Image 1 (cartoon, rainbow, N blue to C red):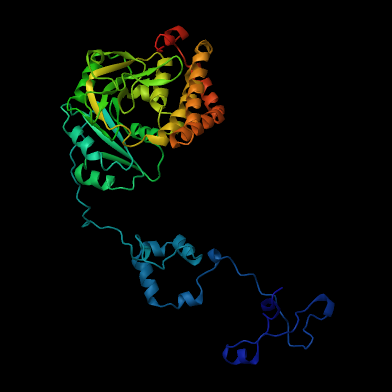
Image 2 (cartoon, one colour; image 1 turned 30 degrees about the vertical axis):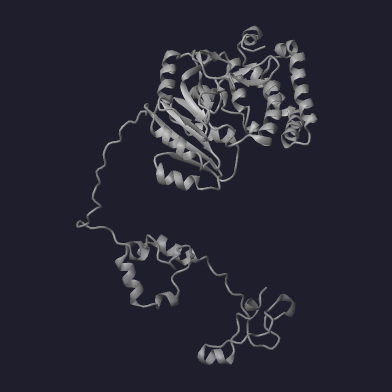
Length: 443
């Protein structure tokens, strides 16, 4: 029991005189033990105060009633304040009026007949917008030296039914500022940290609205008719899923860099026609194993079906992996010789970085995609190619590229467990036979 309850029934002389400055008494209240129900000094009966009712059941206090006519005028002028529910909420301190807020209950007034609502605004009807035929995706990482060339080449395309998305992979140069100033219509996706080429392409494809996703390296220069030639080839081969451009060296424009991708029986991917002189052999529109991701078009529904690039690969060989998976589903790739693009070789990659990822991702591509029958049939060639690569690296082990190759091959073997889990899913969807796939592999 509190001290207030013990002394609640007593008053001091000062309280009797002016009702102020009470002084607590230390007397005990009556109990059965002291018999007569009086305090020991006979000061009188000590009463237990009644429990204070809940504020909702308590009438207005004297302090509230004496607040003056101002409070009454407020209640008369505002039906909300006169409402008993509001009074109960206010007494329970559940209405906070310390700050001016959007709806001030105390000054609220109901609208009258002279109230004029905000005038209705008229907006033009929304017009349907057809999606573009192409979405050109340009992954960029510190590509300020190359962006002016590739963006100007896209602006000069004879076929203009396309949108362009630049995916910046945490560049630290002036790429973004330059793009915003000179090409404000280009859509920008900005990564706060470097996530790799494969992820950047997937992000761009996820935002694409075009019927075809077109991948284009930032260090390239497509000819003015590039997109037009791709579009015409798509119309000629509506059954195909991927379309490969003809990539030529930027500084030697008569030399092939890739006329589509090829895959050998030894499991080593190759750029078809690499370092060869451009000529009649590379002027034929034909089916190839895959398309180099530096300048390739793929149906967006096929991209979504395949799940885009395998993001675990980070960069290099991700296009070979995608082509392999499409081949297992019976989808075709067409090489378009008239869709010409000039490529600055390894301007945004290459070196030891390329050696590492090629060494690692080659193993992962074969482990995930090569059917068991073809693995057994070509086991000697596949093992020989990998041993030859490792031997060559060991002979030049003092070089950074050789060391990177060995690290990549080691990491590829060490990381096979999750790749084999993916293999089960990929092989379960396969629709082509070993013989059909074997015909696509080069000797």
